[in-house]
Length: 500
Image (cartoon, rainbow, N blue to C red; front, side, top):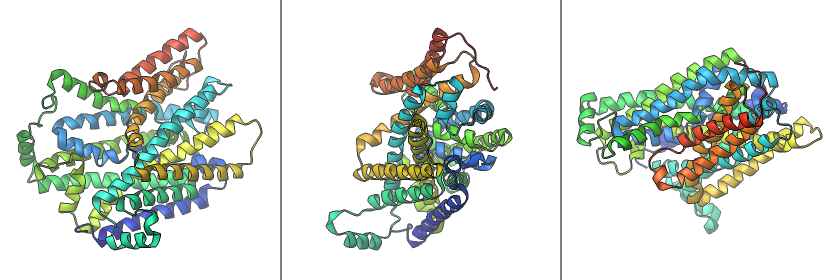
């Protein structure tokens, strides 16, 4: 296994055991009631809220994809980091405190609860459509994260060959054992186990640990990479040789191509305000003061992690000028320059990025099915302990479905997840902002958001001339925003009392 020897594997196993321990702790503290299981009793502090919201909003792309963008695009890749940090900052300044205030007043546990109660949707149309959008797109996201776990194990060769051969001999010829299949199974198994034990609290605490690990890696490694590359002057020379040393323009893209790229990268930040598994952190934070602190911490986290990832990719350009796949920049640097124990920590950080997204989406999708659809659409009261059991069964079912699909490595579903961030952002970000800041906004405007946003994203993405010119979330967001405002004014004249 080369540098990825026994030390790497042992370090990684210790990390997985730590996650299971957190799940066990969550089970002891937060599984006594349904509200505790799905919302941690609304008791989470600023640090846990900030790190868990941040880590869950950034999947493995921040470790692999963003560093790969830095390797491929050079200085222009910093626009992606800027766009994401702006998304964090907008949440800090304009979203977190009003969401906590409104959800606290309405006693909401989820985003669907808050929307329905704030807009008086007694027929629950918004709840049904919004929940179906969440379950559908987050389900695809969970599959992609399991696939990502398998590909990470496969690409970094962390499981000793003798273990793979022993497992193959044990199961026989009925199932082909590989690093990919073991990676998918281990990732799904660990995530499912600690969610089942501790519920939402386990998700948040494990995500906080993973968020800390990510920021630690992406602060230390870029500095070390610059040192190994011989300093900034050598890196600038390497970028100049590759013709990717400009911040404002792209190689061969021309003026309008460069503008489209910059706007597209900035547009990524438009998804943060309505991403359901992120907004739910603001609903469940302990109070408004802790929420305000969490926004500041999350923004600082974003600056270090996002700019650090791009910087690592740029430095890797000087170290490995002919890397076939840009997204191998971080794994290649790890394998070449780090001690096996440190390589195991980096591997844990990459897996953390995958798990922190998958667990949040899995938990929220299950909650949407049980709390937002089944529970709220039934007329009779249901025992709260039974609800915890039912939610756990739904988590098991969704985990198994995602696991089976990921094991088959269905490329269509894996590529479909590219729609998820854009579709969820275009549906819910305008809705959340209008809910907080537009007095005339009503349930019909919200329905327009939920329909127009995802439809525009899907149509835009499937027209090459459009998708090649601008990231689909930008038109999806603004057309959804405009539709929500216009429809609200055409269907009603009453004004709501705002909490801001």
